[in-house]
Length: 168
Image (cartoon, rainbow, N blue to C red; front, side, top):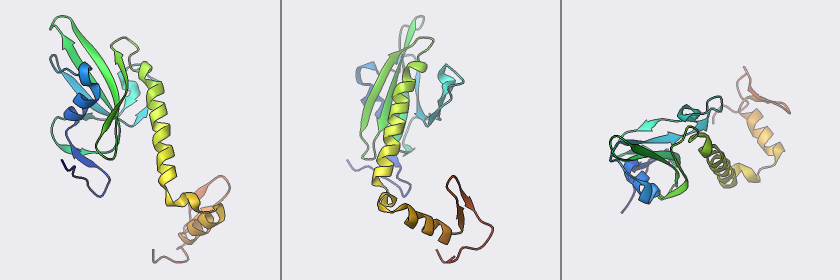
């Protein structure tokens, strides 16, 4: 099966199907559930609100490779259980389950370390693939100055002047 992708690097996929693959035996929608993208942490909170991102609807949509969280709800109507599976969507459309936790008051906090680790690894991969990694500091500074930035040791600031070569 060919996966559609767009110029932003997003993939046309159904988040529920991805969650089902990632959560495997822990996946259930018997008593409800949801999938949320995870783009950051707010450690001022210690519940689900500490996980920054958007809830996703069922059905095909453009998804960015990155972190997602599935909440599966199972059990009886009176005594349901929630299982949270953190998973990563890769640029080829595959998913990897990173961590699964059962509901408790601190379920979100139990996911923090796995979220942080995955975010650091994601940044490292982007840097590793960057064409800038082979440029010297001097080359980078010259290019920024050419584009009209004021570069100091601690800051890179836009200048009010037109860049030397504004054709780019």
